[in-house]
Image 1 (spheres, helix red, strand yellow):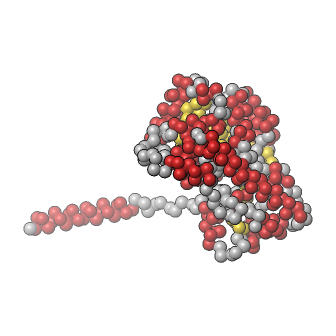
Image 2: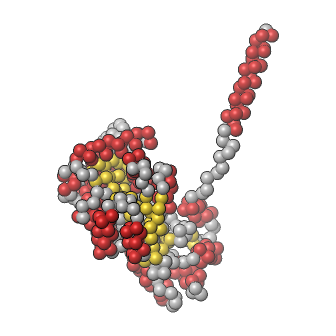
Image 3: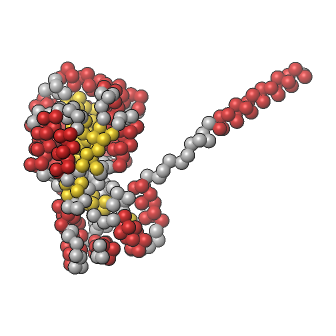
Length: 423
């Protein structure tokens, strides 16, 4: 008995030491900083004011400020409900969804699709597509770096940082004109080492809403050709920017016409309202079919330890809508309706500010495009909007036009006028 007692005591002692060691493993873990965009939403929800306005949320809202599910999405869901099993998709995702998605980016009758020169996989929305490409870049071009515009969507920096690729920046936004710093952008392209990787927003630049003109895109493409740079397009807003998916893909088409090999991240979060379904596509245009097969196999290999297989439901919705002429036409009308509402709110906000006799120019509100508007306000002015008028804006100082409605645009304009009139 004495021997058993001694053994038990020793075992308990060892267990206690091991337990203490395991408890100490995470003592050096500090809380991560809060996401600034989510923080704005939390503060808005906690505010009891009946006048509060949230122009920080990056999701579409109707004119009543409510989330929207498109009718084409509901129709697609009715068609697929109960008709398909829940088996895994291939690592590359839904073949049908990918095929239809490539047509949107590269063109309905694209020679590159016909020649099977595009390596493409379903991704976890646009974020997943960017991350997958960043890891691909790291694996096969380990000594490369990525040039990212100033400013850009904040998560772009996180993605390439976690892929352990060095980042450089290039000029994009011109604060004085509230437009494009085209001269600075072109200088940076010219001065970057030959063969550099550049992250470009295909349309509706986030967070500025400032896009190059068609002529400027052609000059950018030409200079990329001279320098041998690689363009990776993040296209999160196709159709949502102008209301016309073809027009919104113009930058990509220009690069294709000029003979570039490009990468594209696509997402259906904004233009189909499938935010929570996390459905998107990563594509890489290759020299030939053989190279495309090899690249796709490597993209799938990268995806395998990340998430193994992409989710099926959102892919089914997208392929059902784009694969049926009636549903696709319904979607085109609905996405144009969303874009038109945003454009209309831009016009209304500018008109209200001008009617108030603002001494400032607000022309940039209607010149910019897409969900976001770079207001030109200072952090101090934005802080006053929140404290005095219960108007919530992201720390990027960019207004989400989706939060502007006919019911609050007058109040918003008056508040902006009050905090900027002495500027």
